[in-house]
Image 1: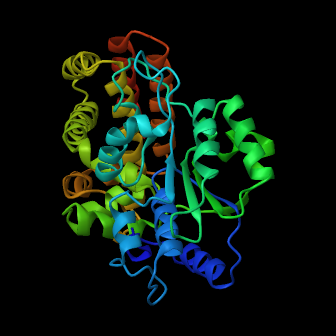
Image 2: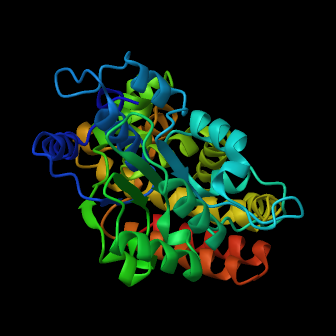
Image 3: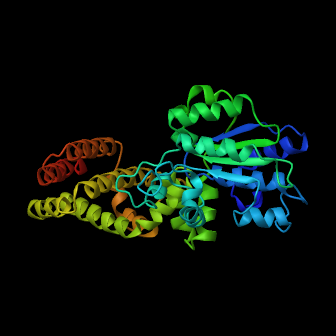
Length: 374
């Protein structure tokens, strides 16, 4: 992984290069920020940059033996630590017990979603954790000298997943670090890291990606057209993981748009019989999809309200949504937009509280009849 392989984060990359140039690499460096923005990729690129035998133009060369080993996850002086699961086979598990699953996961999901990692375990309701057995294994490995590189590097994904016993053992290493060892840690939720461990690390905040960076990634790597890419990027809130998940639910979004269209058309025309059938249909989809539908609808209401300002650059809808909104947006304005969203908030709360979906959905439909006429 080279710095140039990672979208955005130019200031972070520059800062890391300067640490190497100034011979000022801390023994424990934490990259903290939202999920899905590439923190672990940055850590990998930094480790490769440190070990590279022929750095060129502010990046690793990508072709020396060290770079080749890094790119195949086989660098002998680089160790990966990540949450794992106990089972009958691994009663005191360490990361290397799941090396094949990890390699597949990080290859398919370079932006590292924890829920996706959970699915790689056979155990039902798995809760991957970094156990004290991992700390013991690290102490054993780090006691050896390096095999040619100046530094041994430990890359830790999600230190907040350490149990207390593991964290306390890691704390001892951070308090009395091996002189030839660097810890690179990446965290989505730094507030959950044991405070004494957190205080021993130099911290760098990694901010969300820009919408343009996310959209460019989607067009370049996922073949998404430019209009849809910018719409998805806006909803993804700077996270490549969120953006890809949006792509994966494209069929759901088409279904939600059809339901939204039916609701608004039938409500405007006061077709009560059709609205009751609509409410029953939505209820048959199950609680989770009903909640996602209302969340989707709230976004579409907001986008339709913005659509009326006539500035296409601030509207984030795909082509199908834009086509419907070109005719519908004039019915969403300052007198009803907020109240429609609040009504849908109420529906979400009721459905999550196990209320009768048919009643909740029909009630929303009737309320929208009046709100559209304001």
